View 1: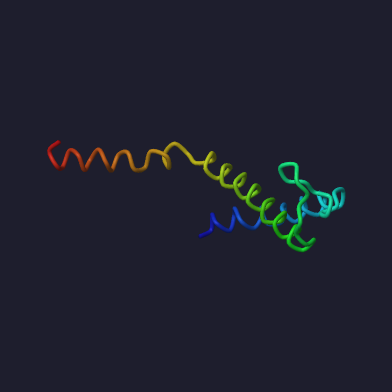
View 2: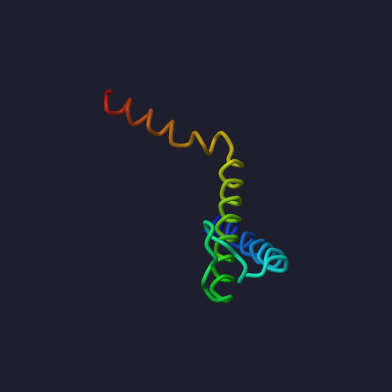
Length: 90
């Protein structure tokens, strides 16, 4: 549970900052998606933008948590599987 908080809370804060910076420069009514203008309200555009930024930031934080694991954490299950195989006579 603690790792989920480590991922979601900082990514929430950074997504808020990223959205603020992005929509300070770009007007939501002037966005284009695949060559077509976006026909949704400003509030919907802000909400979708925030969720998109949050997802990208959460993925970045998850990757950081994944890559900071030690060799012992990565190989934790390997020894257990080997001992089970030996116990079963394989």
